[in-house]
Image (cartoon, rainbow, N blue to C red; front, side):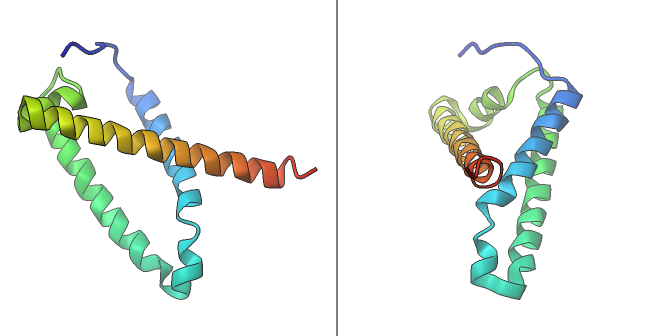
Length: 115
């Protein structure tokens, strides 16, 4: 599998992550209606999980220096399972991006373009 060899600079990567983090709370805003004052528990737990995932990704990126994430998954998990996991991983982020965009559009329609 030959993928595009273009790279993302560190500044671009940080900007992408910041935008993703800024849009994600719109997806989880319904939690406060269910958990009331205990909304901090899922936030703390998800932050801990996120930190662990970032550490794992960082170690994988340093170990497989010249490869992108899909190539790393294919090498670590094998060709068949790697392709399945890569597809699931990409599908998850496409869905999250779509949900984030939908929430952002709804927010803009309700606040900026209310008339």
